[in-house]
Length: 400
Ligand SMILES: *Cc1c(COP(=O)(O)O)cnc(C)c1O
Image 1 (cartoon, helix red, strand yellow):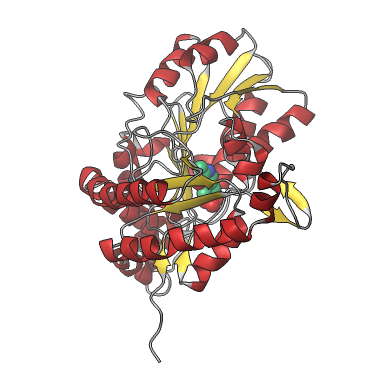
Image 2: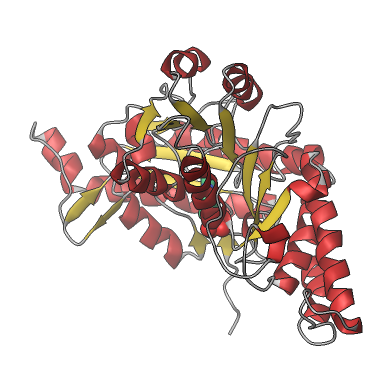
């Protein structure tokens, strides 16, 4: 009984952990298990390992090691940047600017702050998911304390003009945070050259372990703590360090940023073949996101008259792991806020599929997906009540 090969094309959801990363982590579970805050020998080795990882993360961003704070991941880093800056700068102003296409860790933090009396501007994006720098400039008031704009979008892969946006915030003396969770390892980052004051990252998006992340905080930024307790992370983020996770993240970021150009060239070629063939073979299909300003592994496509969820089930049957932007579950319509922000109609957003390639993928994987996807797409469309209703001139909708 041969195991069917799993084709993993969901790298924006999470990645496997590289074997070099696992190897670097192993000693820190049992051999070197000391609490980095203790003073005996085995603890000193733990402390040394945490410091070394801090240097690795800092180097990848062109930051100083003292500007790196370890957290539990992207969600905590986003929560900390938003709430921490809001709380610490309340006297200066209550206005925050972000975008309509941020990750929920960011958007839900903003909604929480709105309940506390902060005012949030959610900048729109164009049909490619790009933020207009002139709109950012126009939105800044003398009450604005923070601008938070993601580096690269997790659904459609659009890469924002971060250096330019950061320069605008800086010119107005407003802090600039970016959620770079999807960008690490895919786009070269330089927090100094790109005018970034705070940056969130998460290890499990760049072949590191889950539950390990970091927030870069530029020296001098006024920010309140989010997690209170012991004096870890220079008294700014309490809790015994996730030692093995931090060591793994350090190794993972070093590997992920060693050859960004080579990594991109390899997966972009495969991704482009997917885009070209799928768009050519399935009619009523559109590419979501920008053609060039996009993450090299990201393919997000909308098929009219097909439900993304049905597509996922068929693909899963063939061992293909993908994701969809919208969930049509429990009888409620939950279209992707990102796709809607790009102007996609609700019914079309339900037919979206995201394939995100990474370093496990091969040309053979692409062949398999291309042998399956157009067939499944065309068959589902024939079966789709939406398609039949459309043909009958009626309105479509979620039919759960
Ligand atoms: C995955 C992701 C997060 C959340 O990171 P976790 O480490 O899973 O909490 C935040 N922002 C973006 C853009 C992401 O893709």
